[in-house]
Length: 173
Image (cartoon, rainbow, N blue to C red; front, side, top):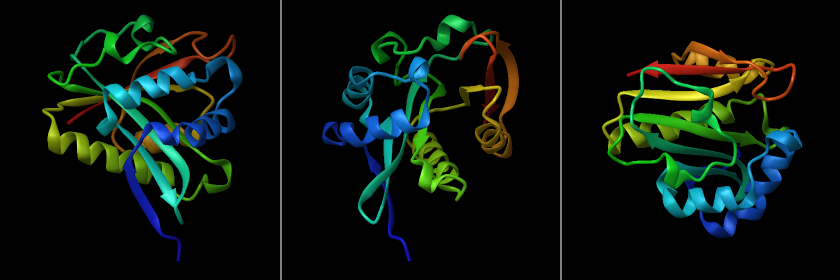
C-alpha cells in the first residue's frame, strides 16, 4: 500500500514542484520558479505538496482574497506576486494552481489535495467562498471542481491561448 502524506511546501521542494509544473502545463501558461518561491514564503500554509512513498507527486497553491462579486480577467494574471492580492483577512480562497505528475493522474490524488487544502483553510480562516480558473479544455479538472460544488461564473476568452478560454468557477460555502 502506498504511503500518502500531505504537508506544507518548503523552499527546498521547489525543484520537484517545478518538475510537476513543467509536466502539467504548456510553457506559455506555467508559473515561474520565483512566483512559487514567493507563494511558499508569503503563505506557506496555503501551499501544499503531496508525497507518495516520500516522493512529491503533486502540489496545490492558494491565496486568500477580499471577496468581489464581479471578477475581471485582470484578477487572474499569470505570474502575479501574491503580495498584490493575498490577505488573511479576506473571505475568498483562490486556488491559484494545482498539478499532479502524469503517472499519478486519474487516481483521485488531485481531488484529495484539493479537499485537504479546502478543509485546512476553512478551519483556520473565515472563508465564505472559493474561486478558481480552469481551461475550457481541461475536462478532468473541471469535473473535480463541479463535483466539489463549483459553478461557472464567467468565461475569459483567450486566457490560456487563442483557442481555449478560461472558465472562472466559484463555490459559496
